[in-house]
Length: 196
Ligand SMILES: [Zn+2]
Image (cartoon, rainbow, N blue to C red; front, side, top):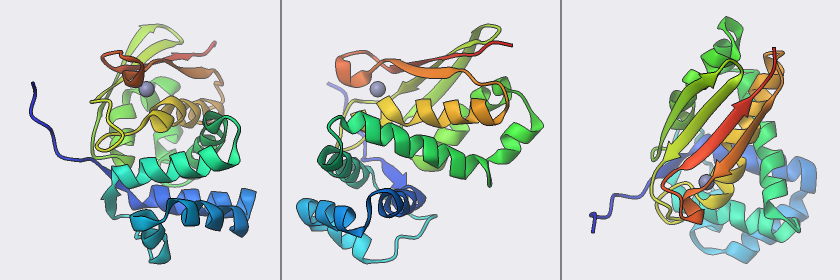
């Protein structure tokens, strides 16, 4: 048995973006209803200022996204995926945009490890070209909602985020989550495809 590794952290800016998006799209009442439902540590967190650059427990992130998207969507994956495309849009039009200005889809995909570390302290991303316009990416970590990025995040985070990047770079294309740690696979795998 491998020793338990310490719990991961999620960057404060994720919580800020989620709250802003939830208020814009679903309104105060929907957001408050979720916080009241969850209660505890997470409700307290949002009662204070969460610094964008701070690191927060990743379990809190998993709890909030499960709580919010579980409450307001018949399929929580759908809501999470909408939010993550929006997050990609916000982030790529500010700081991270430089990545795309300089280069190609390949340039962005090669840096997925760096981009992931902007949001989460746990998990390692890799990426490899299979053929022109076809890349395989993977996320290695344990499957543990208490210590690592949870199932809603790996299934709906990197894909829509990177796909928004492909759109903004003018290439278009798809990034699909094709295997998951939470389904018994050794790592989460993603397939990026675009033409021309
Ligand atoms: Zn996964």
